[in-house]
Length: 307
Length: 176
Image (cartoon, rainbow over all chains, first blue to last red; front, side):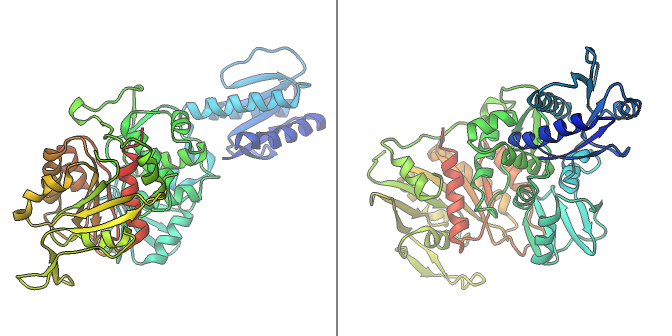
């Protein structure tokens, strides 16, 4: 996941420590893009608490809800949105505090727009777009996203490929379809979103914490190479799970799990639940079919590419 | 279940692509009981299965997975009990160009579950690529009316990869 990290009022030594911390964050699959504060929105801000410019940047960031790590030479208690840390703290401690702030931000359902991956995140999180049939335009290309039918329509294959390759980027214009929706190519919306999400995986933010479930299967027939999306969908059909629980049970990496969740959410199939128990009435609840014994099932699974 | 002869069954109405899908996943040409359509061709389809299709998929240790295709005509419904008995799962294939596809989906789901209530199921929908008004919405509603969720995938029965993926979707529902 790529994040925008800004700093203000740091001395040279603190800036060096922060650079090292940013490099180490890659071990957590987070790739900070570190630049001096320029007043624009970012995912994390690091300031020196006793520097006037740093204090000014911190005020602006807090008004916007951006988490702040404030380095200080004094012992100061943390407040909402700000973590104070001794300026001579080890680099690993800085990494730890930055990750805590980042996770808290995600857990609060952070505005996905702030992280990048605009097109797909907007479709997934923007209440005015969720579950609506839309005309999606990027440059001179227009496709139709139809959650009501579970289909994506385009004039041709090249438009679909272009859209899938770029759905994680900014520049998309979404509006209700104008006139009759037609397209020479009609494909599964979920397969289209899954491909786009996995392509934009590095730019996608982590999926907000919570328990999620699928009531209907996504149509993954057109994504035959993406076995991981199948595993994630099957687990979400069985019971509500958090992104981390999904990662553990599916043996699929967190990045891919989150990509699947963004895709299923954009398709309007994902439901957030109150907890870990299935919300389905007993007659509709998932029942695992019988599994052949004697290692036979494993042989069949292997033959069909499941191992 | 006889573990030396595990079965996979393809079911669904006439013209949904069962024979084509079996040809795509099997290791050898299926043994078919194809006869010319009495009422003339249905598009490119000139024959139909009157008993059943049969083919094998060989597993790593040469254990055969027996693949059966049920005839789509209702007057062969007596065969369903016999063929589905002991099967690992059933793939129900539907024609995406059929205006009655949701009713067909519900009919076949109920018919198979009446025979084997807890059997693994998957629904494969063919011929949807060029149908601009095809909708999964009605099919999902039909599945919900029939009980627990079942994977429903659009796919090309001529594609080995996509036909294999359909079976894979059925298999993941059996995995713990």
